[in-house]
Length: 437
Image (tube, rainbow, N blue to C red; front, side, top):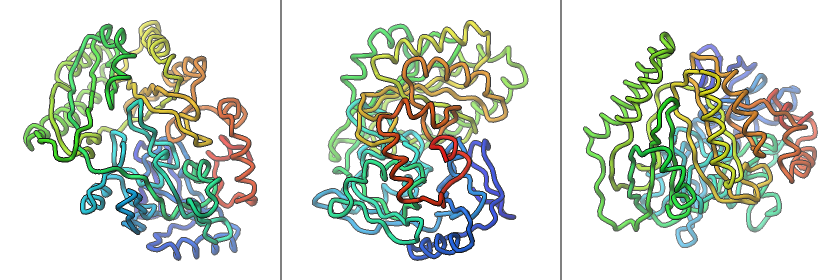
């Protein structure tokens, strides 16, 4: 978010900058003018969404284009389910925009505060072995190139560029419009419950294959897994949503309030963490309800944290998870945040963490006031040993030389970048590290 005085910082407080200039374009033409003006002045320019990346991918030391005001619906092809949105539109705004047309997004992550352009540019994903990340739902885009001209990428123009543009890290231009493949509106039957971890892991392949959307959380120092299983139902199916009181107790009182207290206590007295985690594993996530898809996918996250997430071949997820469990035990650390495991289908996007392989994700977190370095570095070493690819918007240490080995289309992407942005108008320190100069 951009604060008075011009200082920008991300949600996780892991990146900040004081740009030379901050602008709030309301139209595509305003973005074009900003890019051209920056080029004339020899200034770097970056677009910023909601600031939910934990890396420095959105850090803009030159011109920061805050897309907060570039929001809304551009057009809808109801018959084909194609919906075009302005790039700054927040994910939580989209359900209301789609409702009059009887449409919904195919899949979402568990946070909906991001902008649509930021979500696809960093590879944001939900869970479900038959569903791709959000970028995999992209069918077209309009991009302001370094020249200030519009590059159209859709079924009629430059379609060969879509696998690069749909997940472009902000390195190829400024996304101003995104066309998403939507589906008829649907509801989800959600079952969330604590289960014995050993039982969940032994049946993991079956749970992944048979559920529409399955994920698990494990609180370190416990033998319990919190599982979430969502089943897709027609929009006409009966709904049994959480009551306002129940949702407030679960998400606000327990999920935010008590968790904030627990993190604060744990930071001061680390020895309390195993007991706190055992209590958390009992009081969180024991409910069943049915509601509109977007209301089930997304949850409220008000306790700040830092996160690292790696994508692995799905067949390696159990061994990698067990290695993380052993690591925490062997090192004697006290970890208050859960380890999260999710799943996604393979896709064809050049820089997607799920490129050409069915994927499992393992994410680790630390409270934002704690130093995550030792924990994250050790977990990263495990993930790399299983062929892991880091989430572009979450903390990791890899550079271009290491990433090139993990992405078969990496050199094609950087060659396209050389063509579209030869002077590195959209460069910053993070992109220089992960893509090279």
